[in-house]
Length: 190
Ligand code: ADP
Image 1 (cartoon, protein in one colour):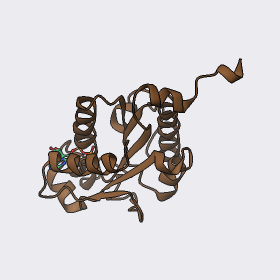
Image 2 (cartoon, rainbow, N blue to C red):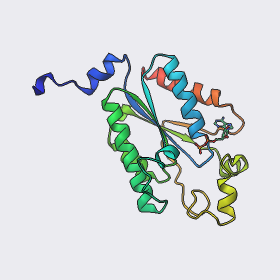
Image 3 (cartoon, rainbow, N blue to C red):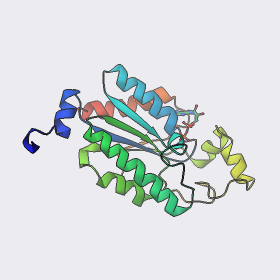
Image 4 (cartoon, protein in one colour):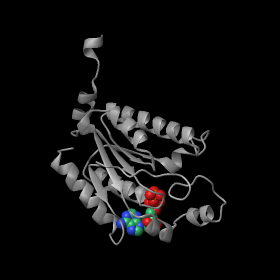
């Protein structure tokens, strides 16, 4: 029985792709959800098989029991990383849009898969620009003291030191950002 088991490689080969995790990290408002959605659309257009794990959405479901203190944030990232790993085993390109503020959290996610299966994308959009955009009004509320432990304000964000891709989305279009990620993936034959 075990000799006949379908492997992760077989599942990916069936889909004519290399499975991986595309892990988008950055401050709130940096563009993670926007770019992840646009990137997923572009990949599907290219007949790729994908699944998007969006941190904000998962806080209403899988992670609805978690807060924003450090142990909860660790657990939040741990769960999303484990689920993303399952998608890699399913042969999919898993897109993750998650602040994942600490290096150790992202390193944990990276440790779950092989080296070429983890593509860390740091959206390095500066705090001032994220705050200017403030798409959900969260910075305004955090500055007013209505939200505590907000990343970049009173909770740390450790920028990656060796992300595969780094993009400051200031003054660019999301299409330009997507094109940069797509060209990295094409070069690696994903
Ligand atoms: P995050 O998921 O990182 O919190 P969002 O994607 O929710 O960020 O919000 C980013 C905001 O920035 C959106 O309002 C988006 O329209 C805007 N924006 C401006 N330029 C870009 C860009 N180049 N890439 C992504 N988002 C951008």
